[in-house]
Length: 449
Length: 181
Image (cartoon, each protein chain N blue to C red):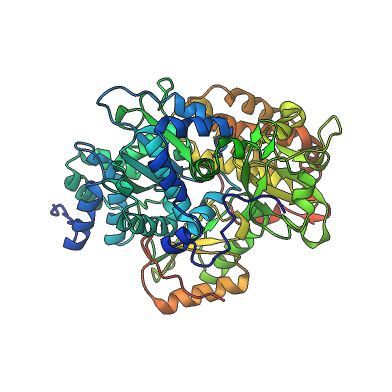
């Protein structure tokens, strides 16, 4: 069994509630920090831990924290990014639903470390019921003196609020999230300035993912060095993986970074192998935006080394033969899956979710969806595959925010690794492994204007 | 010339809205716009008519266009009337791989409507939506604030019947899922 630090207690009945959470060691880190640590010491522990942003980008959290500007008399904000929307990702939902106090304790610790007096948790609108669970937990924390004025008689004050979104993937991008929190359309801002200098209401702000914030709790409890002792290379600690698709045991798993991909897919501790005794065809390892890899490249690197669940190993080989850990949204596809059809759902997704601010993304995502729609409906030509490649290459790197890359990468990777399947689909129609695929879409999807 | 319709929050909703506005620093009350649009949608028949958005703008002392431009950006805000129950079937990768299209097709057949349409009796609207973070429990749909997961065609039938029997309008602020097992 791998070591669990975030989900060690998730099986305990009632862990959602404050009493039970405290009975199992909850808020010990907060007591320790407020009684015996300075804010600077907490930042140091987070730096030592090697924790990297768990939302997808993997940027070192301690470094992000150390960039925070601290001008006199200007409020600072900590914002928790709970706008989990990357297809294939549902770990933050699980964490908030099961152990909301872990995130809340992490928010109080982070706010203390960074000097914030008001903090917000931005939860995607569709998670309405999750937001209610978190709000109830916040009420419990206020009632117990863990939030509000003079927390645990330390002199530290903090107000913590839940902000609800309204359906927009782009608000997971931190500057779009801040725009949304200010009551505007979720259009990402041009950077610099980064939020650490000018974030919420123009004030210095740190935005961190739910899982990142939660990880601050064990780091304060056990020390940054203990956290850094888990994992492999520059992939320290544990990571929540949302596993879905054609596997026997979909769900959220906490892994020690460095578990072999093969073990993660086939062992009973995790995914439990491919559903219905089928063979593995491909995996999207870190949420919809990361490159899809075929079986041989997801299980082993191009050099023949076993591929591990870590930032470095998954990225081994660059995009030619590797991928990314991303958000940990692990989508598994069996031998009968149509890569073309799956890619169409991604292309449609990114077209739907483009905020429309930058032309390459707004227009390019639309064209990629249209061309894939045409291929799926039996009207594709071989030149369309090259056209798709051309379009994606003209989006990547040419937009204000990374949604452009997120839309381009899956198209590029599907063509890079499965070009023959696109060509077969165009020449011979919809069969993959004798399973007929596209006819179902015909009467479902309205023609695109 | 018809008179301009003016909508106002009920006293109860206005009290909730006031509490929400108090979460933000002085002068930053516009931050309450999205939460208040949710309240307006829940109070005014599940969609945001121009008078409903005007009501929010008036409450926050902002220009009506500021409410319109935000309402039109976010997919959870309906700018046209919808049925009492909007069935939002997730259509992205993991759900699609796990049979979401069968669920959509089944509902279309059962209700005699196509995706995007509302039944003649105003009971159901069928939509497909992008990833709802329920990939490990696919396929799924959202109705009001509730998630219905690990759907089968049988469970989908049960859901339609239970929602019809219940008869209530469902908005995102609901918190009482019907039993579909």
